[in-house]
Image (cartoon, rainbow, N blue to C red; front, side, top):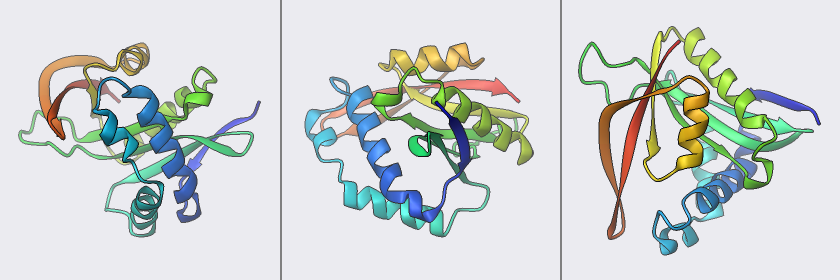
Length: 172
C-alpha cells in the first residue's frame, strides 16, 4: 500500500466531496440530525471544493492523502479563524476528513503531519482545531498526535439540534 500526500488540485474536487460526505455521514451518525447528513449534496460540495481550490483564500491550503493514487483523506489549514487576542494561536487545522473505508490505514496520520508541516512553513508557531465533543474517534486521534484540549467551547446549530465543539491546541 502506497500512502502519499500532495496539495489538492481543482480536478480533485469531485473525489474530495465524496470523501467529505462519507466521512461526515460515518463520524456524525447519531450526533448530527439524520436529515442534515442525508442532505449533504455531492454536486454542491463538488462546486464548493472546486471554487475554493480554483481561487484559494490567502494563507489557506488544502491537501489530499492518497492510497495507491486514490484520494482517501482531505485536510485544510489556514489562519486561525477565531483570533480575538494576541494570545490566540495564529494557525488552524480547519478540517481533516478520512473516508471510512480508509480508517486505520495511516493515511490520516500522514496527512495530519503534512498539514502541520504546512502550518509551520506558513510561519505559524501554534495552532488550534475544533472538534465535535461527541466525536471520540477524532478526539483520540488528535490527542495521540499531540494536541491538547483547552477550555474553549463553541456551539453550532444543525437544524433544531445544537452541537458543541471543543478546541484543541498544539505547539508547532
